Each structure stands twice: as C-alpha cells, then as structure tokens.
Amino acid sequence: MNTYKLLVVILCFVNPIFAQKKAVWSIPNNDSLSKGWRVDDIYFFDGATGFAFSNSINIVKTTDSCKTWHTKMKSNFPSNTFFRSIEFSKGNRYGVAASLYGDIYQTSDSGESWIDISANVPDTGLNKNRICGLTHADTIFYGVGWWGGTVARLYKSSDNGLNWVVDYIDTSLATGLVDIMSINDSVFLASGTRQVGGLPRESVVLKSTDRCKTWKKVFSDTAIGGRIWKLQFLNDQIGYGSIEQYYFYDSIAYIQTKDGGDTWNIHGIGSVVLTGSLRKSAQGIGFINEQFGYVGGMFNGQFGTTDSGKTWLHNFFGNNYNRFFVIDSNLMYASGDVIYQLKLQDNSTIKKTTTNRGESRVVLHPVYPNPSSGVITIEFDLSFPENVLLEVVNLDTRTVNRVAAGYFKKGHHKYVWDGQGATKGNYIVWLGTDTGPFVQKFTLLK
Image (cartoon, rainbow, N blue to C red; front, side, top):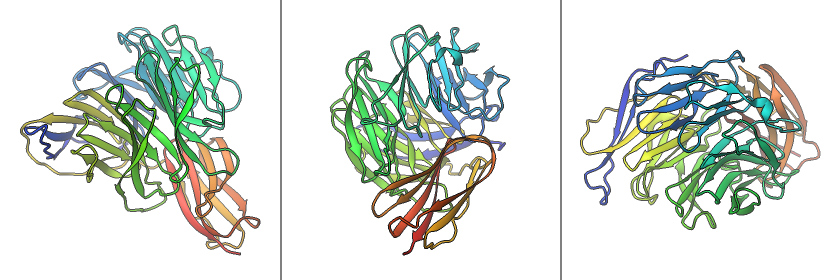
C-alpha cells in the first residue's frame, strides 16, 4: 500500500463573479485512511464529518476534515470485497453501504456500528445485490446496479435501509445502471448503459417523476457510447453527467441539462494521452457552482473549468477520480487515489506536485495475433476477484461481441474469440472490471 504524504496544489483560477476567489486543491493527511486501489465513494455530513471506503472492507470515519480516520466497520469478509456506494438518509442517523459483490450493510447510529443486511435484499438471478449507486429522499433509500449487467435493477428501502424491494428495469431503457440521484422526493434521475445483442452500446439517462415507479429515457447516445457514470445537480434545474466513453476513449466529455433533466447536451472537454491498456475515460464530475467544475477519471489529473465549461484546463493533480461531493459553494471533496479537498478562498501559495497511482489490480495483455485473419487470443490477469465484462468491439460498425461476463477469481484468464465470420476493420478488446475499463486495439484482416 502506498504512503501518501501531505501534498498541496493550488490552481489559481479567477472568475469575475468570484473576483477574490481562487480554487485551492489539497490533500489532507490520509496516512491513516484504510484504502485499496482507490477510494471509491465518500459521504459527508458537513465539512468536518464524513465516511469513506474502497475495495477494502473497512468503513472509516473522519471528524476533522479528513486529517485523521477511524475504522467503524471491519468484517470477516475477504479483503477484496469491493464497496462502491455509501449514503445516509435525512438526519444522518441511518446509512447504507453497498458493494459490487453483494454485501450490503446498514447503520442506525450515524455510522458508529454496522450490520450485514444482505439477506434482506430479495434480488434474484445472476449478479444479485450489486449496487453501484445510492441516494435517498427523506428517509427512503434507493439504489441501482450494476455497471456491467444485462438487466438493470432498482432497489428501494422504506424502513431506513433494513429491508428492501427490487424492481427490474425494462431492457428497452437500460441494461446496467451506475448512479441515481433525487432532485426532490418525487423526481429522480438514473444513469448507465444499454447494450442488447450486438447492437452499439448506448449511454443513457432515465428520469422518474413518480418516485421511481415508472421511468422514461431522457438521454441516449451511441456515437460516443459507453456509460453515463456519475450524476450531479446544483439545483432542481442544472445538472451534469460524466461519460465513461466506449469508442473514443482518449476524449473526455460530459453532459449537461438546464431543465431538470428533460433534455441533455454533450460537451467536449479535451483529450488525454493513451498509454498502456487502461481506458482513459471520465468517471467523476463535480461543479461546486456554475462557474467552477471538475472532471476526473481513469487518467492522470483532472480537467477544470472556471467559466461554466467554456474552456477547460488539464491539471495534473490527483488520479482515478470517482466521486465529487459538494459541501457548500466554497467547499468540495473528491475521492480518487486518496481523498482530495477543494476550497474557494482568497489567498494561497502555489506548490505544485504530483500524486502516485495505486497498485494495479488488472493487466490486459496485448491480443495476438495482431493483425489477425480471424481468431485472436485474449489474456488478462486479476490480482483480486473482480466483476468482469469482456467484449470485442468493431470500431467501424460499432457492433459489440460479448465474449465473457461474470464474477472472476483472481489469477490468469485466457479466451479465444473467433472472428472469421466478422467484418474486417479496426477493433478493440474491451475489458470492464471493478478496477476500471481496459482496452487493447487490433486489426481484423480478410
């Protein structure tokens, strides 16, 4: 496990509306934070008190703005249990922590103690209880899952997270959901993907105006494809979504709505250098106000704007962003390799540095032969058990060929894909995992 020392980066952006404000990113003392590959989710009661976790099963709490952390839940499950989402309901007394491997916990004392309530979630079929995103409206919890599914789920608890009911989303709307959020007690947005058969992968946003009883698709895109990964709303009208891109994975983009999620537009941000097989897509997005916004993901640093998205600057601060959590108009936290803090303040001193990536959990080897006249061999290694979705994608026709999917043990895995009947052209092997998406290119000859 890497040791993170106190690092401070100050990004001096000035906006006319905030003439005396500058965006100051910093890393509090995270040496005591129990983490794995990255901190996947965070939830804060206020600027000082919050919770965090990663693929480590420890749920940790801070009461001093992330300077120190204290373990509040340590279970007997294997250390590779992969927590993905944490949420507290109104009043912060009751909370839920959910993983990608089916383990779900509940607290009734503001996170001081946790109990396993996995058996109280009546999900059925394969890949059950894989909750990627959580939200609440008053005292009711809602969850969605999972990023690599073939049937999207909606989870709901009306008794403070103790017992749940499960609904299955029509596959004409979505097949996998990543995030959910409530604008008010009745209006909800959910984001994710739809992929049926060999058709192009579609990134989607769904909206419900009747407390998640019915849904309609309000955003759909197959040109970029992929998944709408995270959602954020500044108010009941202005919202954003990050795009984990599928086809143009060196380009970073996001979506925005100005009418409460009824219509969305795609906005380009910039591009990143492709190195290795890790897919360079966006995952986390956070606007602290309409002017200052940030997007990060499976690439070094983050993109920031100070002019409402008109221009973006790639700042090499932080890595592997997944969640931005806004406290108020001057304070925001973000989870990535560690937990980062943003303050809008008046005076600061510039100290530039970089952060280190966590140790890789996944290796996707170059496919062979490349180019190929038909059959290719795909090999990858997992350091820990992971949810896996392995696909071969024709970049020219946008068709998708599923090779394998499921919960894979750690170790070496090998697959052969027979493309003798496929169309010649440019292809990628797309390996989706809990750690992140990985890509290798190859050419199919005829």
